Length: 83
Image 1 (cartoon, rainbow, N blue to C red):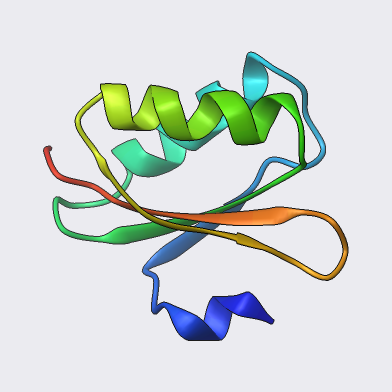
Image 2: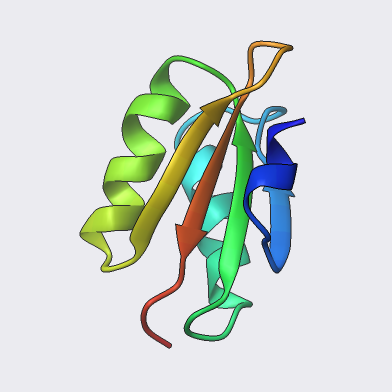
């Protein structure tokens, strides 16, 4: 699986919820990390892939990579840049 390419400190799966809850769950998971740690967010194609990375970047965090999984979901790797 694509997770092996990047080491991460925490993971959240938002494939079972819809916007805007997808972004809320991602933000809560980021809040639990320390600055510099990496979060892997597993999400569905479509609206989450379009909106979640943009919103997280707008909040000042670093998008490291977006990888498509074999099952059609995506893993977004984010470095928390501020506490």
